[in-house]
Image (cartoon, rainbow, N blue to C red; front, side, top):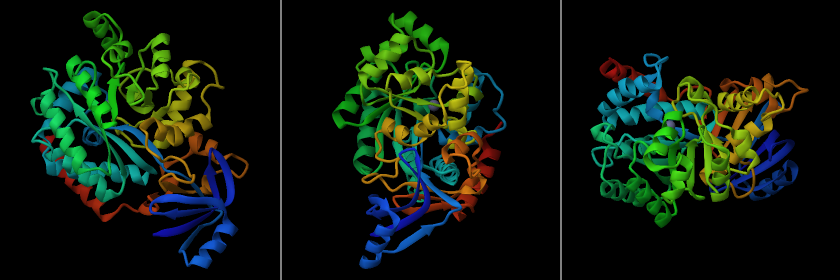
Length: 431
Ligand SMILES: [Zn+2]
């Protein structure tokens, strides 16, 4: 299975290139180079060829490093609440009622929205456990049907305050994770002890041991709010990143989500241990969390990515813009965290942070890319700057995963059906 894509314009390695060809074989970029040369070879071998003209720009598919897809159901009615009320009255009240069938439709809807916005990989931090793996299987099926590349961060949670349906023993979390891992070798399976407050120290240690044993990534919410740092210091004598380190969970497999309330020594510790950080600037604003110091983490060489987290509007373009602008305002410095750095977070760096071989239009990587309408880009402006500072999701004309077109401008029939299902789920669940 091979196909040649020729682009009049493309962003490769952060730079705009003209007349460039991408030969895709078995879902990956096999050759990237001069369009004419590759076109001649393709003609010789009878390889099908598709051409994108001047008014299109090819870019790497966006990497969504952190999402809770079901939270699309909270949109509107649970806006503008403080975090505690949002968690207790929305999250923990409504979502335990979701059946596996509901979950299938909700995830189908959210993943379709992401693909339409050019997101080709999503790390879904999934904590709707219960009924064994039935709910997880429903979410994985939805990902498969939409075609999005799934990083499945399967949550472990044992705190007393968590809804009954989500709480598990370490033994159950482990055996259910093993079952998913063996059934779905093609998804990027990860373990996700929920956070320092929702997973016990013993559970975090067990998850770290699991991730070492199976060489899978470990996702964990950490330092999203100031209270967590205070509580960890009070109960364990150290702050959150140091505590993760003590539990053996801070290493090159660790994906720390948020990392807002951390001190300079903890930033250095993240870098020394090879841990990664996912920044969720739109959700952090929506929930009034705070601002992660990605400028310092970036300077220390910590692999960084962006996530749409609460999925109020899953848009990598919005996240890039917010990532850049929040650094400028936090530092009152217009030179802080520019467009290219933000673009890198949403593509190559984000993929590296998740340890997924994507986010770049280069040989060997998964052939995940997006075709943008370039007519909104001023001819005198670099495409990356235009995209970050004034881009719109509506510029996405087509989304390709493994070289296969999985979304276009019009919603698929399945996405339209999902929207109707969500209407009835919402009528049933929303108070
Ligand atoms: Zn989250």
